[in-house]
Image 1 (cartoon, rainbow, N blue to C red):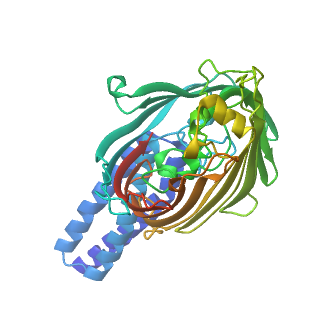
Image 2: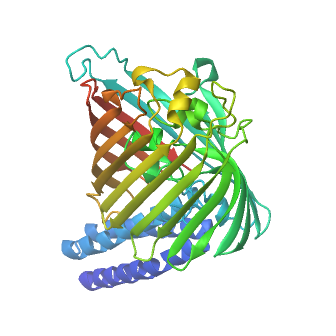
Length: 461
């Protein structure tokens, strides 16, 4: 009689587990906090019943199966709680077609009203004491809270959305830190195929200029190509349109141009105007087109073209146009635990001889007439079946040169012809947190490369 009663109790446990398993998705769909609490109570009761049955001597293998199913249910409840802790996060990792990371795109998931999100990063950089040529590197190890970012958005209606990003860099303005508006724009949502955007916008170039939240890219540091040729984070004042047609996403804007007075032998990064009293003598066009018709695959191209002189005068008093063109080709593929990404970019700058003279550059200080860079990156999640965390070893090979060509009368600095191999690992205990460790082997044609080891942490909310 005791065994029969125990068997009945075991059958009841299995049926309860099965019924709870069907309830869990409903709780997720309804986003119902009370349902989650009820599920937690049921799990606790089932665990107590298992302990009682084990004490009564029920066959261990039967209890083990019930415990396995109960454990899966408990994990499902935890997933529901995590989802409730970070509501309205954009789908996937890209926020497409908005051209934003998941935290930045949260406002689009609101029915109406305020949306608050953000992200942050800290980075420890440990440098080799020697350069590749054996001389002292003179590099100082550094531990920096790189940035703390706050997204504040407001959805006025189904048609009008305000989205902003405020960034605090390097922890303190008293220690060379800064506070900046990274973007602040208004969207008019008309239809999937056509929407309007105006304000301070992120330029849709490369991978990281729009998608720079730490949980959506591999690496404790951003690829150098996407810092000096595509000058991430690159934002300018402008107006444009975005949308999707079938399997294609696009974004296109007219923006104030770069300011060539900030160009250097090391790249174009100093030419960003960042929306701050931006010179508007010259404007530029930027656009991007991506194909997304195959699950897990994104293939596309982006381009920027415009003058960057901003009324910069030459020796005779005339203005120097400094026509600037940047193009990129990019691709990404994700399947299961596999993550592959590639980028190639090329920039050309006109009137460099006149620009060098106006800026007083001589010898190997010339701005590049042609700049090229790119990288290939691969990572694999060794925990692909685990919904709650990931562990991704990754490898990145990068090649760039910011002085592929310079005008007659100037010469290139071989230190600007670089090859960087990054080997690292990224761990996410939950989707909103990431920890990264990596080693960078940095080589250049001058033999002055300095290898480094990085530890990083990041979060989004």
